[in-house]
Image (cartoon, rainbow over all chains, first blue to last red; front, side, top):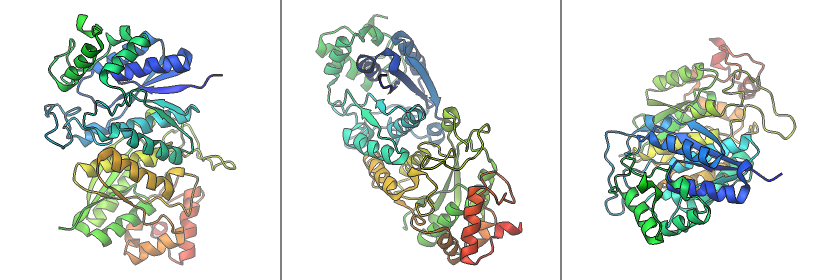
Length: 220
Length: 220
């Protein structure tokens, strides 16, 4: 029996590409998509994740995390805070401290209960947006921490870690994931069609432009 | 200005002793007690934590975590599962995968928002009950992970790590924490006065007996 894998699926471009990477590598029957409802301002992300999982015909679980809202104080969950880019070397105000660490730890707990050791996350350090928990050195340490803390040798796959947005778009094309891209959500302002102005929209547009591929999201 | 510290306070004997350790080391005005409402079957723990914090006159925050209940499948949150001791080398069914990792990561996020780097947890590997996330090697790795993931050099203090239960009771006495012990909760069966029969009750009784100190909880 082939081994199973848990993919952290946000409903965005990167995690959707990772879902198709996992389909290619583990097979459709072995992929479990896991989405976190952590009080994100843009609830549309949860619908996108469900639509992507359904489109890819994989099992999909959404787990709640009410703690980030209770912690408050960042632009991704707090409606009173506008999205800003980081001034100089500071962290952007979309930084939710520990967000990816929490996601991956809960994903590991979910996997642990199912005797699964492979986890996939769409973090990337190349188009590094100032989130320190998206870097491979952080992921490497987390892998060790999870291994010791749960007595299970987890492997955290980060297929996009060293890719540019252009290369991620090309990977999506090569994996047959472009149709699913029409179902994804990227915009920091929560708009569909996307605003085209926020840092996330601009980064996405740049990737498709450089790859010479039309973004299927633009035509919806 | 003295630095501040976040103490993870469950309302039990060990974390209460740690709270007094922090009071002694950082001063009452610099201690923040942090409790997690993670759907524990024994809601009395939350009252105990609040009572201990009030008794010690420290600021107290309770953060919700609804994810463990959604994950399910363990005896500490799932009312349908009876507490068993671990058979042989297996993990006991009170093991919630990743519980302490999650607590400390959220505690670090809470501290990060307040420019605090010192965290205290009452985990101990001496009276090791089969929880791999209570060992110092796990905590060391987690400290590195949090440091990288949040760009902040956290220090996770584990004052009880290498103490026996007897020594923990003696530390509580030396720190003037015995009065607070009457307010704590230990019993896995959620009883006050405690059942005296479950592994947690037996471990607590053994510690007080060996230290030659009467457990103030016994006289309530």
